Image 1: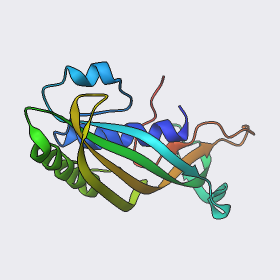
Image 2: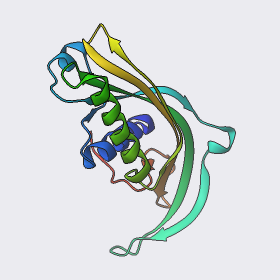
Image 3: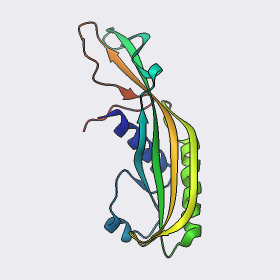
Image 4: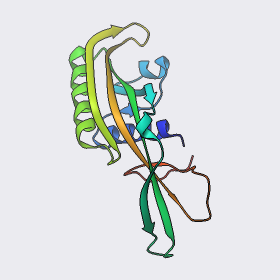
Length: 169
């Protein structure tokens, strides 16, 4: 799974774990059927900074096998869009209340390797495409990834967002 997808999934999980309805991707038709506020998480910008390259962090011994593995890290800066949609029945207030729950989730439930740097909330407006109220938001993060490598390995392929469990696609 790509680094960006890991971050999006971690953000969606943080929101859903705290009771916020959130999705990684969406369609206008799907939203039109929603009875509650939904937050759509997307990518606005990804930057691998000059200092964000591969860094040697040390070594770790597997307790079960006693195998020694070198640990490497990588840092990435990115900005996600987090647009909150609320049906007409909830009104603009429902959209803003959902945005407050999103803010709370982002300040308390993110994994260890994902640091919130900035959070921007816009105004709530009526969105003609979805027929819902929409509050445009974005959040800037610094993400830290780890990779363990045994002595006989030469390629880095499995960087995992720190504080999360590796997922299979």
